[in-house]
Image (cartoon, rainbow, N blue to C red; front, side, top):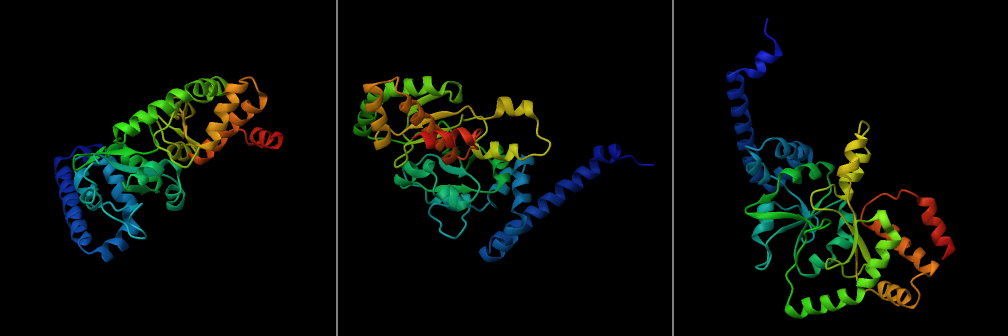
Length: 295
């Protein structure tokens, strides 16, 4: 009579498991040599490989070589992390990625504006399991993986760009304080952004908390733990584009009369649209609709 516990502790079974995994990875690597064959295989079993990265620390590097992602520069093709690193620009130190619901949604996201404007390639991670995968895959080939929707995104700037940014930041500081007072607990802080170009504002999450996409995935869980959501859900930072016409108009309005009710509505409206643009769900859609009707 053999119990399951005895089998789990068996050294022979551990050796068998190790050899099976080793042989399977060798076969995967052989398949990956032919792009067309690998594309068919990857379509069916990519989730299993990503789950392996999440669970198997021993073979994580070998499995990472097998991953394929669409990028901002790959068109309809998918590329490996090895290919991505090979074509990184000289001044690029990190691997940039964004997670989301679909390739179209992340490609149009405000978060990739500045990174793409600099000519850097961005990995599009649109499979829910990618969120769990990148929690374990912190770096590849010595390059850190950086999520463009979170804090900690730093892009090299010239002295002129730094000076121009500091001037804008100083000019917009009173508006940031006012917006934080109006939004209160809805955001942790309001700062001037360096990551957006064409959008007026975005909501950025903490480097170690859930991203907007992860929050959406966790909310969809049937047996989710409400207490976990409390401390893991995103601490939001509202980043504003100080050179955007909307923000410039708000700055003028705040200077003229900071107690204006319309100003309050506009700030909340910007926050609500930033929620949607950044991938969060809106808690009170009726309030949002009411503000639009008033305006």
